[in-house]
Image (cartoon, rainbow, N blue to C red):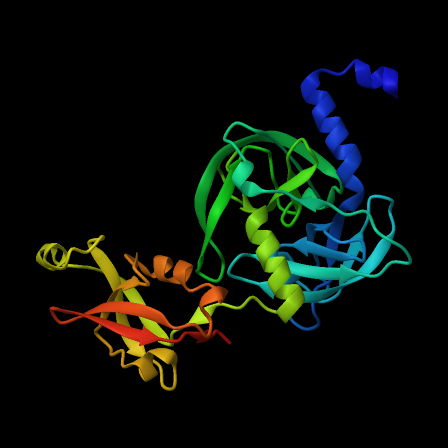
Length: 315
């Protein structure tokens, strides 16, 4: 083995060494279709262990695709997997399998250290072909990807490491054997346009699901849309953006109703941060703002008002 390894070039050595350290912690997921409509039709995906006691990450759309979930390790052993929790807004889910002893698991890396052009490695179960390896580079950073829930996933990694149906939920690795992303999407019909949810997001979602069983996000209790603002209004009030979040409906007994927000108001800032669109408002309403007073600045007609508001946890 040592002699064979010496014959490999530096790139190949990095890939082979990374696989040797990680592939035991990567799983192929098989999902049996629920009873009733679609019964008998299964789905496949990927996942990877993040703790020695059997907790693993995958995509939410994978975990939600079927009833019974079977996870197969690199050694061929099969384990029943149970759903711990999922988050459709980031397309991530946590499952757990049982085992008699400690399981090999992967380390979540630091996404902020990634660089465009950096070599990355994907391992997964495309088309049911378990432990399939593809390599490429980080093509771009900071992309936004629309989750199936309609909410934007921020900081998404774009890579040209080939992904196919079944890769979803598998790890995207750097050459230090650290998980930098969770493979989640491809653009059908496009070449080498593949995306992964960043490891920093996965770490936060994992923590939320293990602690609370769900991902907590702040909720104002409004229905809203993005609207353009008149240039005169923007200049007069010194606003940072030419658009705002228009409140179409204020839900009964929600934080917004209690704070005095009205339909027709246009939210321009939350705690001094501009809200040029609904996605920006979503980004500002993280779990850290649940139960903590925030300052919401809004336009009511031509007047600029500020209302104190205490966001609640979204159900």
